Amino acid sequence: MCGIVGAVAQRDVAEILVEGLRRLEYRGYDSAGVAVVDADLELKRVRRLGKVQELADAVDAQDVTGGTGIAHTRWATHGEPSEANAHPHVSGDIAVVHNGIIENHEELRATLQERGYVFQSQTDTEVIAHLVEWERRTSETLVEALQKTAAQLDGAYGTVVVDRKDPSRIVAARSGSPIVIGFGVGENFLASDQLALLSVTRRFMYLEEGDVAEITRRDVKVLDVDGNPVEREITESNAEHDAGDKGQYRHFMQKEIFEQPRALINTMEGRVTDKAVVTEAIGVNAVDILKKVEHVQIIACGTSYNSGMAARYWFESIAGVSCDVEIASEFRYRDFVVRPNSLLVTLSQSGETADTLAALRLAKEKGYMSAMTICNVAGSSLVRESDFAFMTRAGTEIGVASTKAFTTQLAAMLMMVVSIARLQDRMTEEREAEIVKSLHELPANIEKALAFDKEIEALATDFADKHHTLFLGRGEYYPIAMEASLKLKEISYIHAEAYAAGELKHGPLALIDADMPVVVVAPTNDLLEKLKSNIEEVRARGGLLYVFADEKAGFEGDENMKIIQMPHVDDIIAPIYYTVPMQLLSYHVALIKGTDVDQPRNLAKAVTVE
Ligand code: M6R
Image 1: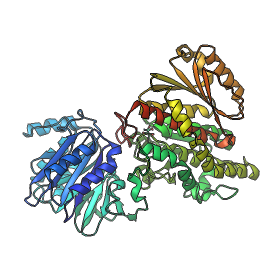
Image 2: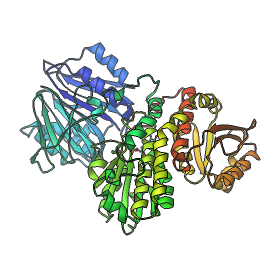
Image 3: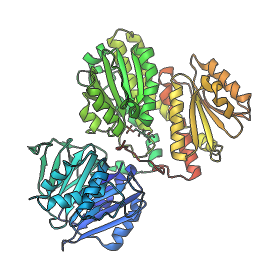
Image 4: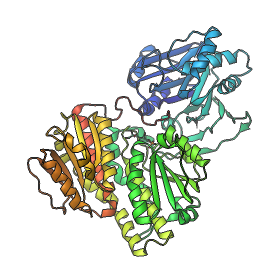
């Protein structure tokens, strides 16, 4: 949830560190700090409560110089957001930044206090600083001190350490929280996400679980969990350099909503021909696995969970395989039964969501046929630990509210569903060609949905003074309503709920009054008439309706029911298409409310703690 950057160079690194933090700010944004060792071997530490800009101003004002440094942007877990709790934490000559949670920090804190250490913060991280300082006293090298420290830590962490007395190196350890090393010329870097380093390098190496690394200007040494020297693969990143820039857009979320046609084209490229899905492109052994799969178990959180819920309808109705979808934080703590030939599918934008990763690790021991991930970040933990990965290619998603990750996940799952149906003889070539045609038309249809931006902006004013909103859908549009309500609540702070429209009369109808806008997703499908009845139930009780309807659905508006007539699209891709106006609605409501759209309060982009 937090972001880490580190650098060892001949030039001054403060600016590089702060720029790296800016690019990682979406991951955590309650406070930030930097520590740089200067030419006199003094450790200059600057920390600020608030956004990275506060830190940047302070660093400028204080003229922080030096070629070795570490930096951090925080999302509070232990201890309130404050300057004292901001990283780096210092113990003697040692400075430390950390992502993740140290579960045995209380026990370690007590031991360290007995040794005479005085704690300056409420964080779990500070125990790492003191432990490294303690171990450094009896270790030949800083790496050895970090290895001894790591052996005492329970929990998940990525941590980076600098020793004021020896600025020629920084050391890092990874256990459950990613660390990537970036290779420069005569200078090296590290970060919790390669995005932080794209302005200085394209060559990256990811540490594996349990690795400890030592980075100097000219050299990178990695030791595995047993302390043996290891080589890790170096890859050249093709991520866009400007992924961290908003360009013409006011917010990353807006940019990412409008990037969806391109993201979908990229996700489908090479995976669909004119008439068919290329199953081989889904992943190693995908043909063998999808041919025999009898059950799909999807595990995910948040928006990714909602996309799984929507795709479940396709798995069962098109491919004829049963499908369960479960929230990772629930799945990982219950006893579950693995059905024969069951495929585990984790869905994740970041590939680092702690609960999803823990669920994958647990499930892998339980006898699933295979573990697949549908993920947007190459090299992420889920990608590396799954048997195969189907990448969504949405491009970097920075807005905390997930948008293009959702629609590309749905497109990926639709391709997967078609493959299963064909491999298991449940779909004719003609039907496959029809679905593939709809997929090819999807980016252009998403453009049509985006063209409703202005209309939806005007509509958004009706919501801005409301405290609650209800979203309704039926069938696969119920999860689309779930996703719409998640978007609205997380960025506008308006309480929103989603209901399967048929469930209204079992309780939520009691809430209906003129202060509760009800948004309905109403494409033309077999359930349209049922949905119309549900809409009447709301109208009869004085509810205020906003119906996003297919132009062919035959709705007529009045003063209590606004109809947003959407151009007709094929049924199969309509759930993806109807997601877009919902995203725009949340975005515009949040704009009117003046919330921090890209970095909504209390949240973080990659949820790497449980
Ligand atoms: O990176 P993931 O897709 O695994 O993240 C899962 C959720 O944390 C994420 O979708 C979250 O709910 C978003 N903020 C929703 O917009």
